[in-house]
Amino acid sequence: MILRTADRIRELRTKNNLTQADLARLLYVTRSSVNAWEMAVAIPSTEKIAELCRLLHTTSDYLLGLDQDEMLPISHYSQEEKELLYRMMHYFDEIRHHFASEEEHENQN
Image (tube, rainbow, N blue to C red; front, side, top):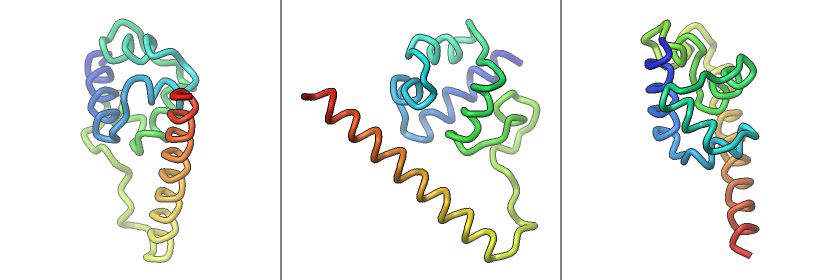
């Protein structure tokens, strides 16, 4: 299970166009912690697993290798609920990118 979790963290991080440093910054951990998770040397805490799932848009079952479905099924939601979910995801992605860009700009100065 730990190897599958490590692979999925790496897979989802890269799929979301995040570096280890980006993910570490969003989770308030060190880059070496993220690297240790991806190398199956360490396991994220329960709290960090929940945060990883939120940031990487996946379920804990998928992240932990208990399920093959990467995403939550939304077929049972109404069209209005789906549109709200998509707008919220887009909004949070914009905020994440804004803060990442802002921090990158500060680091360059």
